[in-house]
Image (cartoon, rainbow, N blue to C red; front, side):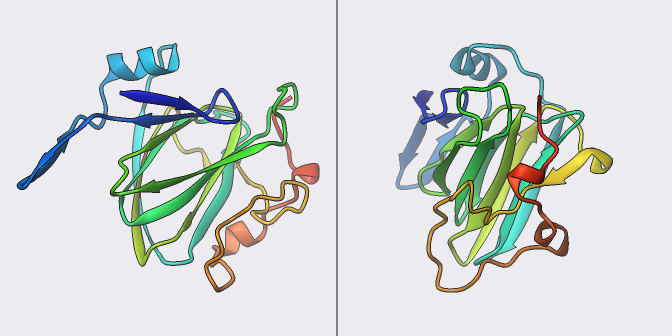
Length: 182
């Protein structure tokens, strides 16, 4: 597995080895030992999620203030622009974000550790997005930061229309007003 650091050292791009020929391809999408070695620690995953979204859908920026989740994310159909925002007040990269294009062709995965808000924008006709989490979904602890917070200045890809967000995500707050990790 190829491991590529991002501008935020805790967030990693993971690229599994893909074996392909005229019949298609094979890849090992997850191996606990290889993953632990790649990120330099042992992480247990407890839940797998799958979302399908139409073009222009933006989901996020989500996090859980208690029972925070680390996420291993990938796009298995279509393409997304995936974003992780460091919301750990004590971190030297606090308030910084990284964005990575994840597609069915590049097979990339992104490791987003605990302490980050996460979101993605669908940049293809549709996208199937899979992610493993290190803790269970806890709606009472879920929070959302505004995807268009000017203090973050996330450079979302231009898609020709305003991104479509859920009613819940439309209520996302600016990072300055968010309950974050101390």
